[in-house]
Length: 183
Image (cartoon, rainbow, N blue to C red; front, side, top):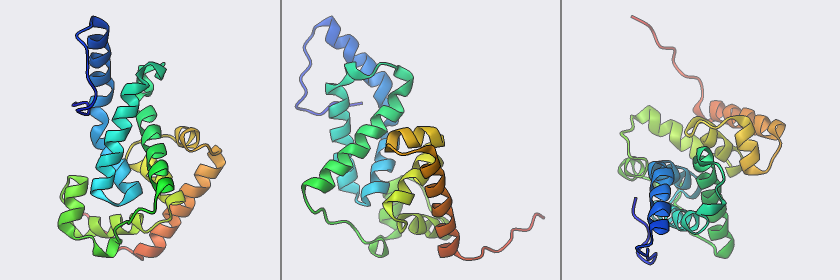
């Protein structure tokens, strides 16, 4: 995990311990942060900026993290707030999902996509943010509805409702699926 270039570290043993803690806690979540940020922004370079800002804020406020087990949720919360800040500051041009090529989409999410997977992703991205965000937190990142509610500042009932509506909208947009035969 590389800190941004403008963060200078002294040779102090306390700084070395702090750097070690930061690497241990934050290093493994960069891919999750990038995927989450991309799902919220729909723009690869903006998502990368969000991840950099998130890691910089995490570095500056590392001492605020009381429980190391909560690092993933803490980082995702920082990323979510950073996306909100970016959209609040200026009108950011987002990419229309129709204009997203399979190569761009695959590179952004770092995996190979079949046409069915691409269709599902396209349907997810077309969901309003209020439905897409809790769905991504649950499906991609494995958060419970309670954790999602805490991070989004909503009640558990509201999150359950949003997840239900998100799935319902996905079923509507994807239409009936052919049944798979087990041979």
